[in-house]
Image (cartoon, rainbow, N blue to C red; front, side, top):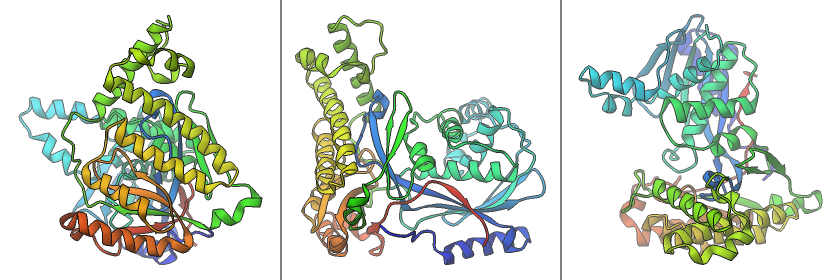
Length: 435
């Protein structure tokens, strides 16, 4: 995974030229925020239970070219969406729910309007900074674009967009904000401003990752570590790539109440196990249940709760084993753990639409693939795989061909050039100077 292939100088210069034209300034005054997408090889669906998860950024993501506007006005255009977003940083931004209530009271159909307002993350960034007492007087003129074909792909593009706006607004207003503070600010955008029930894993990965490393985070304590492959094992590190295989599903396909119910089931399993051990005071999350307590009392759980708990404890153990394997350079062992995680997500956590499950199974048979799983819950988006570098192109071709056989309609909707992407590890979000 040597070197950085994204963003290219052509991409950066193209964005600088657009912003230069929008603002009427020289290109040297234009900065570009690089905010990468992330993958989570191990640690699926256990962050909300305080489990430990792993993550890595990739060399794809969001680019936001910007320059200070010279006033409080914000003007943003997008490479993916029509129109132009305009507002002022000295306006008080209200959470989405509050605005919805205001509009309902006034008889407006706000939900449809807001649904199409792609600039809401920019407003959310201003809201987050305002809510912590930061003084914003300078707006930005900006142009936002994402890597081709990867919208709605399960790679946390929303968190990447939120982080990009935060970094741009902070730079324009000479604010010195740490990555850990920005993790909290991005949480404010999604939890408070937009009303989404997201954790902090995505923005943590985007803000704390480092090229060639895996980030491991304890979601209960928020402590994280970056794990390098040892110097003696640098060759295996260079000899692996990441495959992103797109399903063509843009909207979630699920026939049950889905994610929120599973979270509730995990909490109910924790309640039963904690009570069985005589612990009625701890928060009812599975990370508060000791493994030996689980083994002693798991027979008290009905079938659904038993499956959710089994996924949590087995996945948490896979993360621990994966950390050790990565640190020792045992990428084959790490890959097997990824595949086992994918299987548990299907069998025990019971998530994933049929096209994603088919894609997962195809990847496991592809030449040189060491391991594969969903990216996200598997109801839309893509699957990820770790693959030997010298087999990556052959594997990509195999996956494209086999997926076309089982899902011809979905596969035909995907650009052949971006249907299966060969990626490398990335770095954390950052601002690129002009030259």
